[in-house]
Length: 89
Image 1: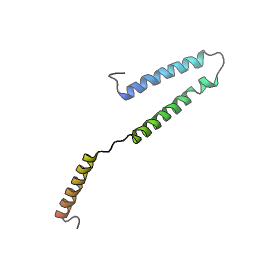
Image 2: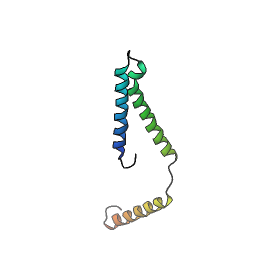
Image 3: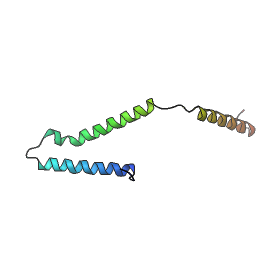
């Protein structure tokens, strides 16, 4: 879905799912447990997807040694400036 923001894609899928669910729920002759619990299963599937995405991204997180060196340099500069202004000893 090119050109859409993330929330717009979510809304498109959500409205599509709700339309299919309402159609299946009210066109059935007798209520079925699968159709009645479909929104619950969708929320659970979304939660599992979110948790697995976070876990994967944490496991594949790359180190940034150049950013670490830059941060250490900034810390030293900040300490020197605070000593100059007599904020710390």
